Image (tube, rainbow, N blue to C red):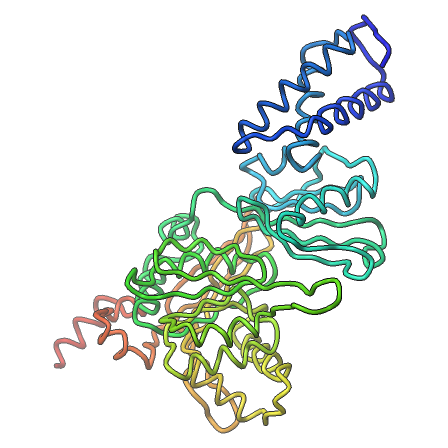
Length: 437
């Protein structure tokens, strides 16, 4: 590296300097206890390498350069600042030069870029290496998680035509509570009270919603109501649930080995969980034949279990569960499958991401049984959108339908005597009902 004394430096020369410093720091192979101490040691090595170049860059440029090098060696390259930004909830890499983020429910292009496809692949490999997962031409897609719990999906060639892709759903460091969802107007106080009663009262709950609608967040919140004295088994593709109870067993799927053996699927884990004496089974998402095993577990004494499915309405959720059960390969008649669903699932909570980026519980629906060949659904709470304001924000109201659920007595046995006002009766209605008694 040639010496220079000028305060400025051209783009190509700066790239060469960055690559040189990155190589020098990476070659140090420093071992330190904890990420913070390691980063400090790397920073010291970086300063030494920079001093050896005898360059004199302006402070602001030098600090940016140092941050970029440290992010490359100790972090996840160009996307590390986005991971550190608390306002960013999701990061989407659509090839080296196209990086987008979600902030406050809205997408925008980030001012970062990778050097090329190989650079993106290196970051993907850095993410999955500690997890023992692999991504290559034979296995071009991978699900993983970052050390902080953020969920990662990556796709490379030949599946990703325009360059490697990374999608990161960031992990919230401050765990959301039900009060937060009420404050964000995702649901009302009465809906929150009702859902708490349903979880404590050991009803089987399916959270339905589209991609990015907030299903996992809501599952986390509802799981927080499970009593501490119950044994919980959680099952996920990539562990991201944040349950706070002590008596928890967390299970995660395993991808196949290079020879194709050793795979452990969600369905394998659901079956195995039944031998672990669980009080509750929480499946991060049903997306295959494990739906049948989950329904059978719900029907055979594992009340109070929770899971999520991809669907746009409670009725669609029933159809989705039917399809997933068929994927189990048992060749069951449709009516038998619907009977399984109707007897296993008590309520469906519909989570929706509206056009303005906000996320709301748009329906809480009781699965009320069968009528002929049809699963009967009854809306207990419903969101009605009335329009949008001048800023594009959705206008609407979350309100009860006035219908009390058939499982009301089960909630009363559990100690929850929800008044008629929770389900939409006015004070005048309640007074008139009491007078007639």
